[in-house]
Image 1 (cartoon, rainbow, N blue to C red):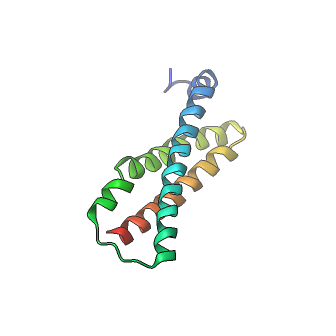
Image 2: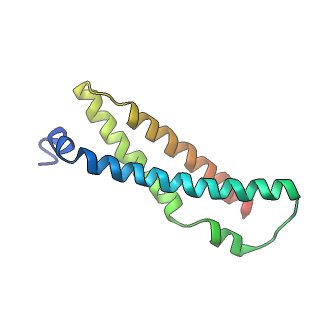
Length: 113
């Protein structure tokens, strides 16, 4: 059914799919907020910390996998909505937000390492 009529599947599972994507975005924003707080504290104190536990504490593999999953999922939904001429702003915002978070996570991870 998903392959034959993807739009019909989206209509039936609309709330669930958007709840999942929104939940994943909230999780990423929460993790980003934690990282930004720690970076701001280090910028204020200008201390040098050479601790590998800091990377393990503030980074996990999901922070890098979830944005890719959201980008793929939102791109598919964006293209379906574009073909059906339906509103697609949420998907464009999801894609842009996920790309921005992925860039920030990579930058901060590189600086922590």
